[in-house]
Length: 545
Image (cartoon, rainbow, N blue to C red; front, side, top):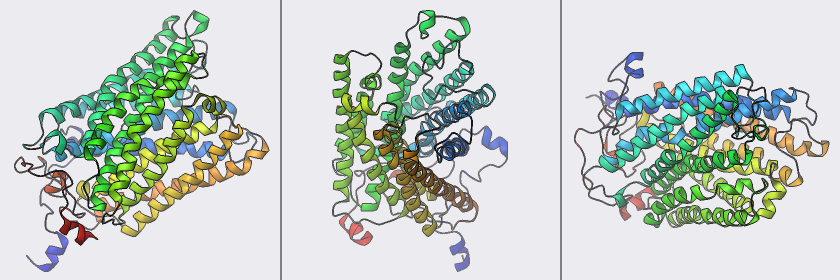
C-alpha cells in the first residue's frame, strides 16, 4: 500500500462498517443495528433541540425590555410551554440514553447488539409518533399550561390542547420504557466473558440506574396525563376542584415521576463525565465502587423527594420537614461523584482535549446547581424563592449546565468512534469555551433576579430588573452560537473530517477494541475481559503527560 493510501485510510479504519454496510432510506428506517438507531435518535433530538431553542430565543427577546412589547401575554404563555415540553420530554430525557446509550452500550459490554433489536427500532418510531403528535397539539391547539400541566391551567374549562398533548406525552413515555427495559436485559444477559459487575464502565452503571427510573417512574407520568385527559373528556372529578377533584393530587403524581426524571437526565451525563475524567487524566476513577453505587443510590433516593415541590401547596409542615431531609440526602451520592472526580484529577496526567473541557465545565456548573438545590430543600429559602427566576436558574444549571455539557462532552469523545473521522480541534475548543461563558452569562443573573423577587412566566417586569435581563438575553445569544457551531462541524466532519485510527484517545474500554467506525456486528468474535476498568499503567500515564 502506498503512503498516500495509508494517509487516506489509517490503520484501524475498516473497509466495511455499519455506515456503508447498506445504503438507501429503507436500510436506515428498517435497521435493527443499535448504532444506526442511535444516529436516528441523534438526528431527531437535534431537530427538537433547535426547535426548543428557537422558543427560548423568542422568550429572551421578549424579556430584553421591561414592557411586553414583542408578543402578547397569551403567546408568551405558549412559548414557555412549548420550550419546556420540547426540551424536557423530547431532548433532555432521551438525549444521552437514546443516542450515546444506544450506540455504546453493546460495544462497552462486548455484545453484538442490544437484547431486543426490533423493540429498539420500535422505541424510535414510538418516540417520533409521540413527538409529532405533541407538536401538532402545541402549534394547532395553543397549549399554555407550562410543561407541568398544573390545575387550574389544565382544567376542563381552560381553552387549551391539554388532552392532545397529554396523549402525545403518553405515547412518548412508552419509548422511554422500552429503551430502559432493553438496556437492563442487555446489561444482565449479554456481558462479555470476564466482564463482572465491578469491571463495568461507570457509563454502563449510570445507564443501568437510569433504566430503573425509566421503567419504574414513567408509568406514573403516563397514568397521570391519561387521567388528566379522561377528566377533560368525560368531565370526571379527579384533579379539577370545580368537579370535586384534588389539584394537589396531580402535583403529587406529577412530581413522583418528574423529580426522578431529573436523574434520567443527569445520571447518564455523570456516567459520561466518569469516562472522560478517567481517559484524560489517565487514571482509574478514584473510589470506583463508591461512584458506581452512588448512581444506584441517586436513582433510589430520587423516588423519595418529590414532596419538596409542594412546600407551598398546603402540604403538612411535618411532611415538608421529612421531604426536606430526604432532599438533602440526595446531595450525598452526588457529592461523592464530584469529590471522586476531583480526586481522580489530582496528580493525573491531565490533557486538555475538547471532551475534557466539557467535563470540567460540567463539574463546575453541576456543583453550583447542586448546592442551590440543597438551598431549595430548605423550606424557609424555598418559600421565599418559589416560582421565581431563582428556580429557573437552578434548574438550568442542572439540566443545561449538567445534562447538555455531559451530552456534548460524550459526543465529542465518542465522535471518532461514531463517524471514524475527527472534528476541527481549535473550533471545538472555542465552542466549548463560549458555551461555558454564554451559559453563565445567561443563567447566573437569574439567581439574583429570583432572589430579588422576579417571578417566572411573566412577560413584563419592573424597570429595575432590566439590566440583569439584558445580560441574560445577551448570554443566551452567545450560548446559542456556541450550540450551533458543533452542529455545523459535526455535519462537516461526517463527510470531510480526517479519518482516524481505532483509538485516537488512547482510551480503555471494549468500545475502543473494535474498529472506528465499528462493523455491523461490532466484534469479529466476542472479547474476553481480563483486566480492571480504566487500568492505565504508569508507563501510559507518563507518556500521556
